[in-house]
Length: 183
Image (tube, rainbow, N blue to C red; front, side):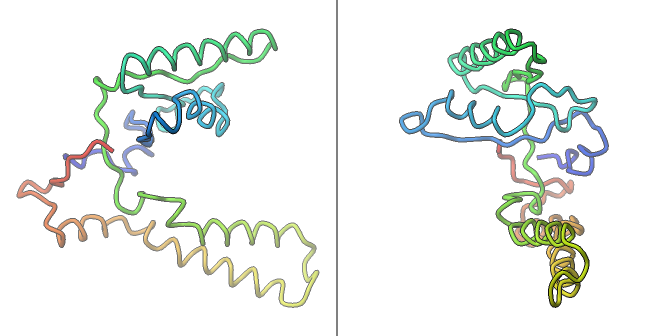
């Protein structure tokens, strides 16, 4: 895979959208149940100026496409009845889309960054308190803040991806990664 799509290039507005591919067992969960979670987790009516954070779905079959289209149409009808903004989510054709695997440091982001997210939330909560509301409050904020910074080092040094790919033998002679997956 050509590593021309990177997190930095997406952030710079290269026209790509951050996305995740969800594999699911249709005997255990329906596409409609996944759409319930998807639409409940963000504001699907918000239009974005850049493609990076646009709301989009890539159905993997014609049947999924029809279900997604019907779901979005129903949401739009409901929005019109309640005089709300229409859904801005785009339904993309996966056969016309090339998915690029995110760099190693961006994989499983929330799982890898659970401590950082918790520490940042702790600092936020402590900042809501009046200064010196309890013993060692300021020291706790410094400690949690340091944890946020230290846990961010891998995120701030993406060249580790390239080094680790080279060490694992996943780089071709032309410098691109030999991993060509669609996730």
